[in-house]
Image 1 (cartoon, rainbow, N blue to C red):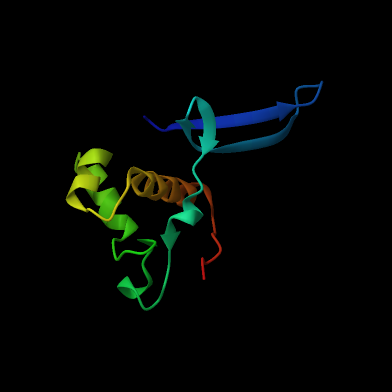
Image 2 (tube, rainbow, N blue to C red):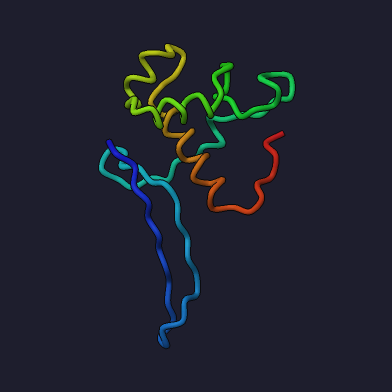
Length: 109
């Protein structure tokens, strides 16, 4: 299952854009779903110096992204880090995508 970027625009009758939303989406059981990374990622100043981590672990989002950048598949990363699930890897990707779209994200605290 591969993620994809989806941008949806709504136009009025004159061609002016009224609304645009975008995000990382996944097909789950043949339906389109947006990954809710907030359910999987936490920031705690007492864990990993406040770096974003997968909830319930000390595995930083940056470790997952570094592994993906090095060419590992999501399945290989899950095999290397047993506490992880595929959804955790997807959440890390979604979180990184959100950071690139936003000028400012509110703290998770």
